[in-house]
Structure formats: structure tokens, C-alpha cells
Image (cartoon, rainbow, N blue to C red; front, side, top):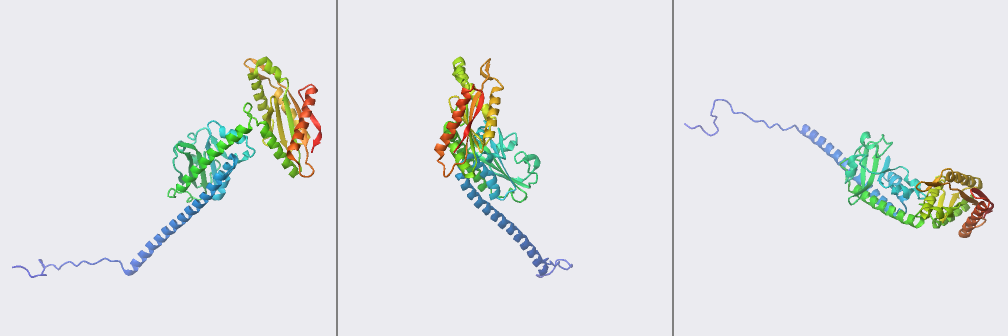
Amino acid sequence: MPKARGESSTDQPALEWVDAEPRPADRLQLLERENLELEVRLQDLIEAAARNDEVRRKTQERELALLRASSLPLLIELLQAGLKKSFNLDAVSLVLQDPHHEMRHLLAGEPASSGARGVLFVDSLEPLAPQLAELDRPWFGPFRDVEHLQVIPHARHLASLALVPLRRGEHLDGVLVFGSRDLRRFTPDLASDYMAHLGIIAAICLENAVNRARLVRSGLTDFLTGFHNRRYMHARLREELARAHRDRRTVACLMIDVDHFKRINDAHGHLAGDSVLREVARRIDGEIRTSDTGARFGGDEFAVVLPGGNVREAEALARRMLSAVSKMPVLVIPGITVIITLSIGVAVAGPAQGAPELQPLAERLIAAADAALYRSKAAGRNRVMVSSVLVT
């Protein structure tokens, strides 16, 4: 006989299911904890976004400064000290690939070459770290001594790092390295587009600055010796005379002639003469300061300008040049060497009264040094003569 609706098929009582919902107080505590976690995450995101916006703004400002850089030393200074200050970094390093040493030579010829201090020039990036040569986009992450000290030396105190490739298309010019003591400053979750753009701008600016330096050097450099040419020497002399007038200091000028140079050309040919001029320029350059200006004045004649130089200093330099050039024979052609001597004239210009006319003053100083040079030649060569007149 069928059982009535609702009756149990057994004599046992039916099971009762109890809903295990948390108590209201527990639910409230759980929600409060989840809400706190969300607030912390939201605050982290807000702070990260704010940091990104601030860095992006500063990056745009710095990019404009890089684009306005008027010289290679200034550009390098902006890439290092400028970015360090702008981004409030603890360390910045600039690693540049310079396999033919061209940038190093261009910077050495710049009056403001101190901007290159701290730059790490390398023939290739790969020996520093193989992954650098394949760096396509900025890398953010923790600083590790073993991996990173070669690209940012003397920086063991850092916690996080950014490696920004300086790329022009497929060509990698180098790497810009940013370091911070803050472990959260450069993390993999940071947006890197603005840093990638900075790297591209920096690479383009470097290429433009190098090209400008090449053009300047080609117009103001003697092709044979690598010394500055007469035009550059005149310009620098006027600059130094103006500075000397402001600072109430002196400027010295040396006029230098290679003794019996015509005999070398006649006996061994003009290629031998060219070799002698190159070697004389090299030995003179080895004696002058980085603040001095050496130039090939014309033919076998050279000139040196000493900012702030007095008679005693200029004469001492001239005697060092005599010794440096004459102490070792010069190879003129294979198997033949000759002893080269110099005749040198020295003159000094003092502060002028009133506003000086720089061009006539420069011409008077050169003329005085040239007259002393001719007295040196007339007295038997291989000697130094000093003008007794202070040019004003």
C-alpha cells in the first residue's frame, strides 16, 4: 500500500540540514579585513601611479634639456648629473660603446671635457654583461653586486636598478644606468614606456652631438697633425684675453718653429716632413695642460696659448718642449732617423686699461712672440727667447 505524502520510508527520523552561515559579527570582521587589504592595494597603486606620473613629467622636462644641449660634454653632463638631480637618484652611470675611440678623442679636444668624467667607455658591451648587448627595452629590478657593479662601479649601497638602452633602430650606442637605495624605486611592474622613450631621445642626442663635434673639429683642426688650426687658435686667444681682462690676469703665447725643416723635405721628401710634423705635434701636446691650446700655425710653425700663464711658467714650458722634441730621434722614413730641434719665442699679455679691443691685442701678442722666435733663430736655433715687453 503506498505511503502517504510526507511519510518516511523507514522508521528512522529524517535528517535536518543546518545552514552554516557565519555569525553577523564574524561576517563584519571578514569584510573589514578584506576592505583593509583593498585599501592597502589601492594606496599602493595610487602611489605607484603618482611616482610614474612624476617620473614621466620629469622625463619630458629632461628630454627637452637634452635636445637643447649645445655640445657633447654638456650633453653627457646632463645625462649624468642632470638626470641624477632631476630624478632624485642615488647613482647614475653612462656606459657608451666607442669601439674606435672616436668619442673619447672628440671629448679630449673640447674645452669643457670635464663633462666626460664618470663615463664608462667600452669597445663592446658584451664583456661587461652578455645580456646588455641584447637589451631591447628598459630593465627594472633589484641591484646585485656580481651582475651590476661593472656597469655602475662603486655603488654597493644600491637596492634597485634601471638599465635603459640607448638605441637608434638596430644600433645600440650604450646603456644609461639609474640606481636607488629604495628597493621599490625600480620594480618589474613599473611602466617602462617613458624610460624607453628617454633612451631613444638620449641616443639621438648623442648621435647629433657627435656629428656636431665632428663638423666643428673638421673646421677647426689641422688634418695632418690633429692639432687645432690657426683659425681656432685665434678664436681661443681672443676668448682668453677677454677672460684675463675680467680676472686681471695674464695670457702667455708661444710661437714655435721646427729648425731646418726645409732640409728634411729636400733630403727625404714631403712625406718624411709630414711624419716629422706629426711627431713634433705629439711631443708638444704631451707637455701642455688640458687648459692650454696648441695649434699648427702654418707650415712648420706651431703656437701654444697658456691661459693665466706668466713669463716664468711660459719659459719653463718652452724649455720642456725643447727637451721633449730633441731628446729622442724622429723616424722620418724606414731606417732613417733625425734629431729635431725647435726655436721658440715667448710673449705675455697683461690686463688692458679700459675695454680692450681683442683682435688688435691678440695680433700684438702674436707679433711679440713671433719677434722673440726670430731672435731665437738668429741666435743659433734650439733655444727659447722671451719678449721683454708686456703686451697690453
